[in-house]
Image (cartoon, rainbow, N blue to C red):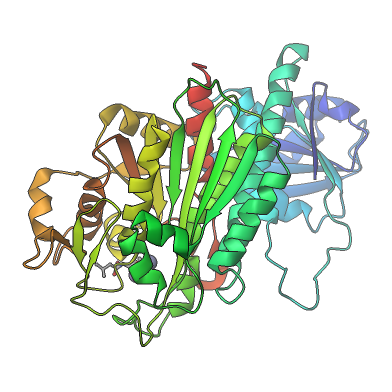
Length: 498
Ligand code: BES
Ligand code: MN
Ligand code: ZN
C-alpha cells in the first residue's frame, strides 16, 4: 500500500474516492461543508432526508457528485464530535476500509484526519490511520492453496493535512505508521504460523533473516550446548521434553551512542505449549501455538525501530522451546538449577514460561541494561483479571511503569498495572528447593511475576503479561501483533531525550 499526505480541498481531488466525516445529529464536518457548498447543497439535502445520521458506523457512498473531480464520495458517520477517542478513531478507519474494499475505488483521499481526537495531533492521526488500515487489511493466507485475490485491491491512501506547515509532520507520521505496521504484521505472521512450521529453529531463522535487512542489527543464536555451559538448567528442563532443540536468540540493534545503556526486551518463545506432563485439556489446545507471541513482538518491535533507524541500543533476547510430554520430559516434583544458581521445584510443567524466562532474565544482566522488559503469554489468570483489552503490567521500578502506561495510552495498545507486593512471595515457598514454579490458588498473574522478580533484582524491570491481548479466539482467531505498538511507542518516547 502506498501512503502519502497532501493539503488541498476535497472537491479538487481527482481520485477514486474521497472520504469525508459526518458527525452525529447530522452535523457536517469542515470537508463535508465544502463539498456541500460546491454541490449546491447536495450533502445537506441528503442529510436532511435522513440518508445518513452521522452515528458511528453509518456510511453513504455517493457517485459523480456535482462540481467535484472524484469518482466517489464516501460519507462516514463518526458519532458525537466531542466523543472521539483513539478507539473510536480506529473504528471509523476500520469502517472506511471495509466499505472501500468492495467499492471499486483503488486510490483514496481521506479527510478523516480532520476529526478532532481527544489529546491527539495530526501526526498521531496520520500514523494511526495507517495502522488501522493495515490492521483491517491483514490476512494470513500463506498456508491456503488458493489465494483469494481481490479483483480491484486498494492501492493508495492520501491523508489530508492542513496546509504546508503540517506536511513534514505528516510525512514523518507516514514513515512511523508504515514501520510499525510492518512490525505488527511480522509479529502476526510469526504468531499465526502453526507449531509444526514455527519451531524454535524457524524463529531463529526469521530473526537471523531480519538482521540481513538492517545493517545495525545482528542476530546470534545460543544452542543447547551453549546454554548447558551457561548453566541454564531451568530453560533446558523444558526444552528436553521436545524433539525440537531449544534456542536462545540474541538480537542486537546498535544505533545509539556506545555509552548509552540498552533497553533489553525478553520475549517468551514457546512455539507450542502442550503443558508437558501436566498436559493441558484438548479443547482449544491449538491456540497454544500462539505461546510464542512475546517472542514475535520482540522481533516486530526491533523491526520497526530498525526500519525507522531510531538512535537507540536495543537487545532482544528470545528464549524459545517447545513444551511437550515425552519419556525424558520433566516431571512434577523435579528440581532444577537455574543460571542464577537458585533452585526451582517444578510442581507443574505447564508453568514453563517462567522457567525459560528466568534464565533469559539472568542472561540479560551481561548487557548492563538501562531497563529490561519481558513480554510473555504467561498466565491464563491474566485473562481472568483483565480480559482482552490491556496487557498486565508488573514492575520493580515506578518510573518505568509510568512510561509504559503512557506509551500504552498514546499508542492505543494499553497495559494496566497489577501489584507486585512482597506479600505474594510466600506463595512460591517450596519444601525441597529455593522456590516452586507455581503459586497455588489466587493471583496467578502476580505470583508468576513474583517468580520472575527473583531473577531481576540487578536492574529496572517490567513484565508484560500478554495472555489476553496477543491473539483473538473465535471466528476472528489470529495473532494481534500486540504489544508491538506499545513498545515501539515506548522507544519513540525515549528517543525524545537522545
Ligand atoms: N501459555 C500458558 C498461559 C496461557 C494459557 C495463555 C491460556 C493464554 C491462554 C502458560 O504456559 C500456562 O500454561 N500457564 C498456566 C500456569 C499455571 C500452571 C500456574 C496457566 O495459566 O494455567
Ligand atoms: Mn504452560
Ligand atoms: Zn505457556
